Length: 431
Image 1 (cartoon, rainbow, N blue to C red):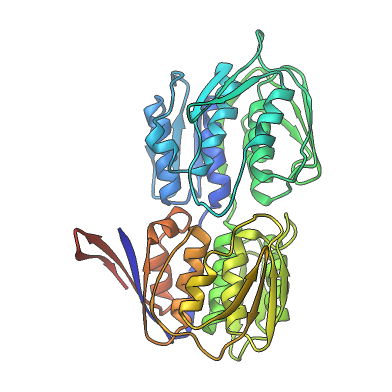
Image 2 (spheres, rainbow, N blue to C red; image 1 turned 90 degrees about the horizontal axis):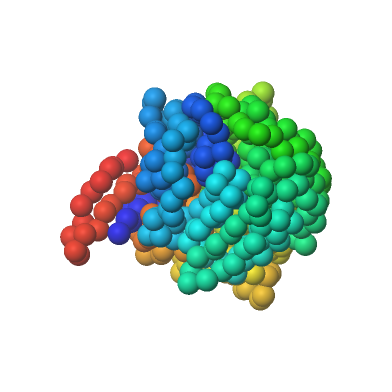
């Protein structure tokens, strides 16, 4: 079991460099199965979700070379169709992209139901609806999703998503790339990592237009060739360090970002009294006084991201006045509020709304990371709190944050990673 020990109360100062986008990488890596050739991908985040996907691809026969910490060369030309190991698939939500790529390449797929963070029911019915529109027969049985394309392969079709779904948009896109004819996907999600996936596929020879809008059109091609691509910076990692600087105080320069992707986060922090200065590919966040109250409703991009909801809640917990968060995406993403309350936060949750009365300070104690983004929120709260905090189940945090200990230590945080084995604590890395 992984724990983080954090001594709070020290402002953050310095520079942090943002890694490649997790949500782009976890779709792009399965997408290499569609490519007949060698893909060289740069700015790949070194996180546990990526390592799991690479293990799955290697088990399927992919030839993978690491040309540096964040550069991969992947050749799936000789991959054999196989069922990915269930023990790996169930540990990562993004494994459902294997359904789309296996359907596209092999004409059939058998993939275990995905795992990942648990913060509410996240069905894949819109994914299945899309595959069916391309002519596939899809069934769920014994914990697996089994899909078969018709004789002659997947056919172009028209899909209208009942809800705006990032995962469904990307999965249908992956399945349609090698189909026969044109596929039209309406009511699409518009997140930056969807555009990045489409750009990656186009760089390999796909014909996709409209990514980043409500309607995406995919003209099926016979094959994809190898090529080179660099993943965009991670919007959520950048937002996490922005909110950390706001809640803990100090001055942090955040490099390797696309400021436009952060507009909604920047606007909310400015509303709360934080000074945010934008440059070409970096942002400086300065916080020297108590934050002001604000209200947030999470929405699909370009609205405020649900993946930033727990982090902004820490800022609100320390702000003057009463703030309100309305969760517009998931049904049960407030489990972390109980952990914040243990630290002295005053939060009342009813259904999909949290009312937060700001307090003067938080206090260090033992808390747990309920999921990836909630874990990041616990780290921010612990850095802002008085005294020592222990964050259990910190492995969730490492699913999406590369070298978070090293990056925070460089900013002046007092944080260390502790591995607990058989009731004995063994220090893994110290900051």
